[in-house]
Length: 261
Image (tube, rainbow, N blue to C red; front, top):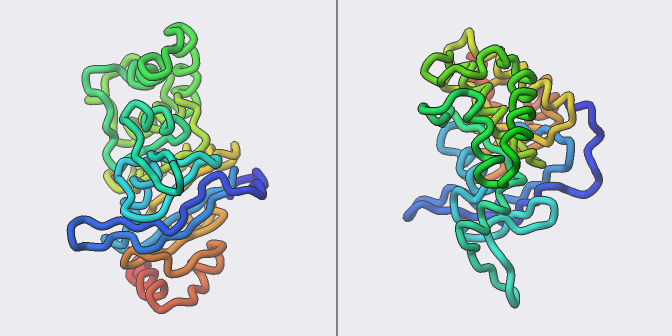
């Protein structure tokens, strides 16, 4: 569990968010707040809307209803006379700087070394000096236990190592919030622990995190709050001891029984 006391004002505000793909309603009137320093785990069966919600927070998906704000600023849109208008791609990219995202698949650039992967966005997007960025990138690789693999290409790294590079790459943009979309689901079981250890360290250092996960141990031990989703809605939320160990809703109980079996 994070050691930082969450701030009073929410850092992420999700208000009445809806999202459909064709005739399928994936998110229905989602309301959620995340405070600075808070670690929020999102649980739920496949198809419940968890990953779509994360992609909406980062504006990888457009909203059909509602709005999302990070540190008070609209993500992906501008407001004019009570209506929302989508920003141009360059403006979206600028707003996205506050959000680091780690995917199920590592999405590293195969033709770049681990160090080059971490350096790419701060140099290319932010226009920062190469030497300064390189020093910070090496420190980030040290933080995730991979400084000794800085000059190695992704194909020469294990899945767990690639995911740790992906975390360092996201941190290189100095985000206010880290989003994790089932970051261990593509890993062999013996590699899961090394990625979760890095995430625990981030939580201990006060990083605000929203984590879609099926790792119940991580959710119970590290998350300040757990949100259970099903059929595109938030069914229940609260401290891990409440939602995981004493769920109030039948849908939550049925899901946890399946996960535990």
